[in-house]
Picture (cartoon, rainbow, N blue to C red):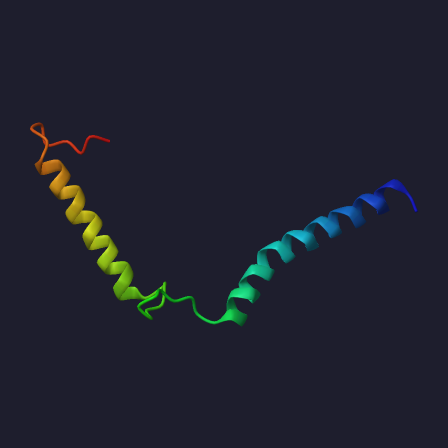
Length: 74
């Protein structure tokens, strides 16, 4: 076995391990079923995400309103 063959094998092994690290967590999550909050709603529920965005926008707006110069302070 020459050096280039060994390098190719190591590269293939690294690629395989990278793929396993990427795929395995997805398989585990799929086997467990959809993740849910204590209220029974799915974590990736579109309505939940939209509500979170609205709350963040409202909080930012209130923060800006409380500053005399109108900046967000960030």
